[in-house]
Structure formats: C-alpha cells, structure tokens
Image 1 (tube, rainbow, N blue to C red):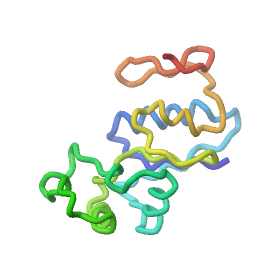
Image 2: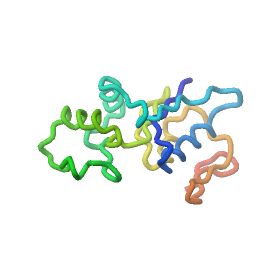
Image 3: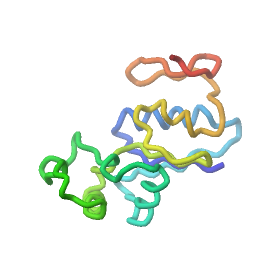
Image 4: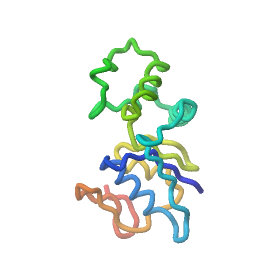
Amino acid sequence: MAITIYHNPACGTSRNVLALIRNSIPEGGAEPQVIEYLKDPPDRATLVALIAEMGIPVRSLLREKGTPYAELGLDDQKWSDIELIDFMMQHPILINRPIVVTPLGVKLCRPSETVLDILPDPQRGPITKEDGTPLIDADGARVA
C-alpha cells in the first residue's frame, strides 16, 4: 500500500505527519513516497486531481503565512479557481501542506493528527509532536 506525502521538511506539522506515517508502517513495510513539493511541485493535472480527491475548495488549499499571498492580493474573491491554481503553480509555497495520499483517501493534514483518519495501518508506538504534545500513547492509541 503506497503512501505519498507532499512534504516541506522546514514545516513542523509536515514533519509530525511524516513521523505518524512512519509510525504506522508495519515491520518490513514500504517507506512512504516523500515529495518535497517546493523542490518538485506537482504539475497542474496532479494538483487539480489532489484538490478534487480532497473534496475541498481550491481556496482552502492556499497557504497565507510565509507566502506571497498578501502581496498578490489573494484574499480578493475576484480570483477564479483556475487563477488560484495558476498562482500555486507559479509559487508552490502557496500550496498548503502536508497533503497525504493513501489507499483510504487524500487529505490536507492540518492539524497533523488528521492523517490518522486515512492511514491504513494502526500506530505502532508512542508519538509526541515536536512541541511536546503527546499524540499517540504507548499502546498506539490516539491521545485525546
């Protein structure tokens, strides 16, 4: 079962999601495909397909923090979905992350624990977010 993550290694949420994915891989299982989307952005067809599979509005995939979102005036509702995708193609940093693709679905995994909804295998051990917040206990159960 292939799992793909559109990942930004500089993003704590993305690193936490990757840790949760790896924590769910059974012994001898395949590593996830890690696509550093800032170095290797998805092509237009892939981006459109990901948005459709997530079932979210194009605007919901836009990242504001640390991007040219404000300078480009992307908060203006005048922009069509096609134009917003054009901006994401020109400036991949505008694509929010991480996006995870599994056999159970595709999801923008913010907050990081939302990835648990689409992982095909259970967690194998405890996981704590980088900020110290526990996510998974020693039994592999989600911490409330």
